[in-house]
Length: 181
Image (cartoon, rainbow, N blue to C red; front, side):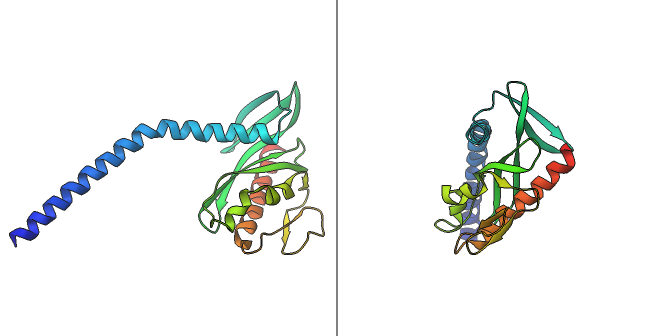
C-alpha cells in the first residue's frame, strides 16, 4: 500500500513540474506567437493587395477589417474570415474590392486540414479560383468544372474542406455588406 502512495506522489510531482514548465514556455513564447500572427496577416494583405499604399485598421460591430488605399483612393477591404473545417478551425484572409462585388483573392492563414487532401486549400490551384471571383451573389461550388459566375470547383477527396472555405467566405462577405454599406 505504501508503494502505491509513493508511486502516486512521484507521478504527481512529475506532472506538476511538467505543467509548470509548459506554462513557463507558453508565457515565454506568447509574444513571439502574436508577432508571427500579425506578420502573417500583414504578408497576406501585401500579397493580395500589392498596390496598397496605406491601410486603416478598423472595428465595426465586432468585425475587424482593414480599409485599403492607394494614395487617398479606397481600393478595397481586407478581413479575416474563420470557421470550422473538416480538421478544425480555418482562418482565411480575404481582400475584396471597394464595392464588395469581387474577391481579389484569399490566403489561408490557419488550417488543420488533413495533410495531402484538405491541406490543398492552401495551395495555389485552389486559391487561384477565388482571384477576381464575382461575389454579387453567394459563392457556390461544384465537383466538376465551374459553369456559373461565382462558382469554384471543390478539391477531389476534400469536399468538406472546400465547402467550408466557401461557407466561411459567404458568411464573412454577408457580414461585411451589413457592416460597411
